[in-house]
Length: 253
Image 1 (cartoon, rainbow, N blue to C red):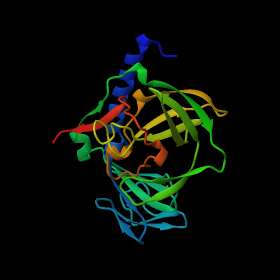
Image 2: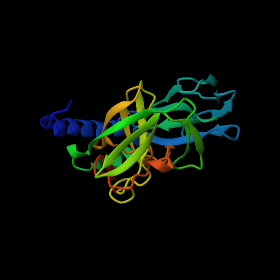
Image 3: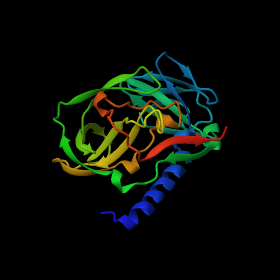
């Protein structure tokens, strides 16, 4: 339980940590490209070798200078080339290689993440309702025409000034972790237009949960167009302003 005296200092520590992480090694500002392996052999600028999808893995050929030079690479495999790191990923049935460069222009230009002033009033009590095993939701994505069905983790029901909202959550990948993607009345105005994310821990059997919207964060696609981020399902566009959490990336130039 956070006391009023602890609330602002704890939020300031969280915000400072966020600003460090986005520009750190493998932070979203360092992502310079996501190279989809859809049409046979693919060449990545500035990186040796050719890359192709093969039997659910990534085939690398002629990668002299890489930490692995030849062979089939599983998904989520890191490789290294000088200061550049590469990661094999899978989204749906498609495979890709991401390139992370700590010398990326976006890192050099980064100044800060603007955020609303922390406000305890935006710690909202909600009721978490777990989803049935078969529940799914159709999700569009930023920076692509990709659409996918995701299993639903559950729904958070709450009110703000008498207005009811229900936010559908996906699984965050952490134990009992919920991933909320939402837009609100500030989206596209004071805050990033595509969406904001909120990650919370939910009781497996359902029950009360505090949604601290002060910890709402910008999605990776706010930092690099090379990310493909899930957009809010239709019900996650709330009919009021959430004046809390991160707003936008601020960069020089």
